Image (cartoon, rainbow, N blue to C red; front, side, top):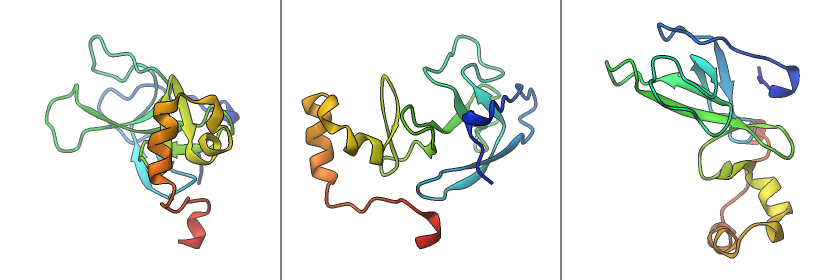
Length: 130
């Protein structure tokens, strides 16, 4: 099951870290439950994320304010992607790597150089082909 922003799917904050759905990266297939979707994770004081994100309460911490950002939607194609470096890049907004590569000339030289180093790394396009 893929959860997409395109479906206007909004999650309400879960105060106790209750699972609200499954996050699945459309590129690498990473699948894990998430406890919140949005920009202001619950039980945080002054944290506002720069993008609407799928968030999981940190299972390794007893601190209610700790959380893990799992991913978000690509600004260009709207695929749900994880924050892994093989799947997406955050540069003012979230971009999946296939969209970054298609529009590479629109990014700063530093990002172009970093991606040139990764060029030999395979692109994940279909989780079923893994």
